[in-house]
Image (cartoon, rainbow, N blue to C red; front, side, top):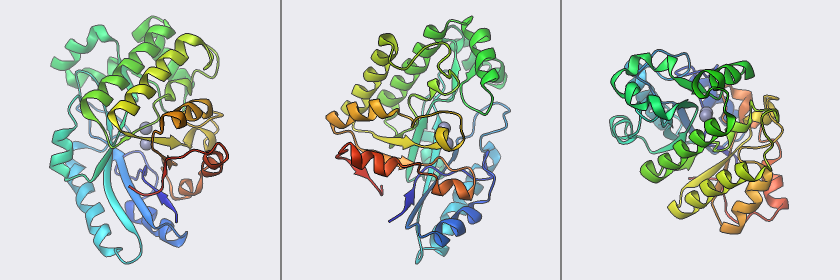
Length: 281
Ligand SMILES: [Zn+2]
Ligand SMILES: [Zn+2]
């Protein structure tokens, strides 16, 4: 069985059409494929599905679902950005699109002091958010300086606070890459095993455990050469196993070939005796 439930396309920042992703998956023996485009956001940006195209995305996934029903099980999902002041309620998107599941992720962090301003000026959001993802670490450095005066602990705490609020209030089907804040850090500002950082990681793990959300094991950092570990990290996964948290391996594919890049995640989970590995939703 081969599956992937975290898949992008040209509707957002992916490099292939929905159909191209499906054809590649079928040709490589996948039995399950879930699409999770980046959710529409109320300001101009280069990575999310445009609001005006949201229903086209949903309808096209559903059409493929029917067309390919005898070859592969396709699911309609969305990777929804939780941004205080901008997108705090997933339900309208879930209901409007008739989504079958969602991944809740944090890529954009406002300084807590600017949340109220954002609420009334959503179109200006691009100037008020720390973008922690993307291909350039310089963007991370500049955003940290601009929105958190270079105070890494404050920025990281805001990231985890935001993550925790999302998990508690939205209970996404899958929690997306919840320690990705380490990617562009590149062990410069802090190390993963520092107590203050681990405390934040473990607090979020505890919340995932209590809410019963599934957690992904995201391999994208490794095959893109941006990071040396999964999200969440191997040590964190060992801890999560003691709590029995269900995990699902995802490649966060942006082009067809990415679908194959599981980077030894299944083997690693087996090696450490991870008990609750899901292969389908
Ligand atoms: Zn993401
Ligand atoms: Zn993604």
